[in-house]
Image (cartoon, rainbow, N blue to C red; front, side, top):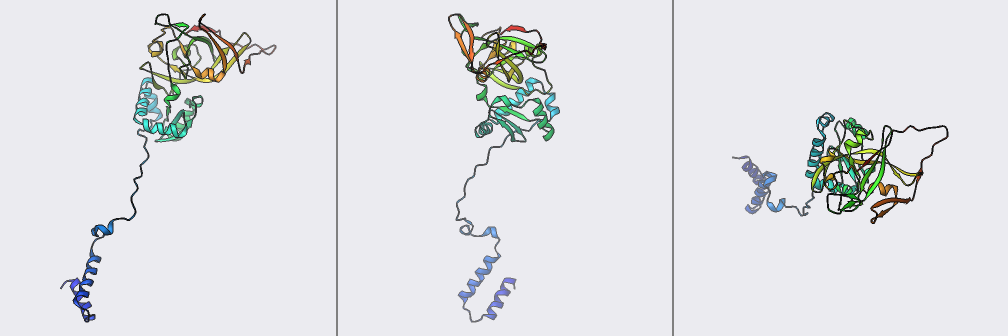
Amino acid sequence: MSYDEAVIEDIKADLNHLDETTLQSIREIIDRAKRPRFLAPEAERRSTVPLIDIEEPLPFVGENWTLEEFERLSPEERAMRKWRLKEKNQDWLQEQFSTLSAAWVVVVGGKVVASGRNLKKKPLPPQLLKICRRTGKFPFVFVNDRFIAIEESASTWQKTILTDDYYPTLSIIFNSASGIVEVVGDFDTGCSHTFVDYNFLADQKIIQRETIEDFEKHQHLNRDFIYVDKPVRVELPINSSATLILNTLISCVPNWNFSPFVALNPNRTALIGRDILLELKPQVLLDFAKRQTEIVTAMKTRRTHKKSGQKKKRAPRRRRRA
């Protein structure tokens, strides 16, 4: 006799007055109690609360490099690898740029650890090294493409390769503790940023070549180029006694002579965009008849003065037409 049958016989002995129908009900109760939970009838397992399909947030795909790995890469490799990561994480980055209203974000371990609403405070090598020492990983800095727009079109002033075509020009001075140079650059209000020949500025000692340089890859005229942002001092002369001065970041392009920036004007050294003019706020007169650019006045001017008895040593100014 099985255990179940013995139990039933005990129940029958104790409850011999019960009829067969009642005993059958007791058997069914025992049988249900023995069944594994996952074999319960479908109707019992079905939840009365409807399930909500919660969409998981997009993950960042990619691992940060170590400082040693980063240093072994060439400028082109640094820019290309980050470009590929940017393409792979396009949706994730657009979500971060939109949520944070950011011009740039710093990503470590798949998370945004810093961001900024304009390019003026984009992290430079000292800040990147500080993050690297704290986290053990070299941070990715991704730039929102909307802040590096180049909407170049054929214009006037500087002669281009096109017939009867000229580019407006603007004379600015790049200044540093070790060098000073005046550049006549092509002035393009359709370009949001200023791009300059990296090697030219390095040779003039306006910028320094560094081991830690976080190069970016971008496109212009359907051609790729790489650049790195460098801090510079920009001077915009108004007249013989007044100069507008700005400490800012400009985009320095290596291999400039093979870049798309010389496609229309092979003699160009700099393409001056809106960023410098929006900061300094001058009034600029473009004389299309004479093909001349004149800084008429400005909302704010900073005049340079020399204190009596003091002479400031400056490197000889070199003038370069862009």
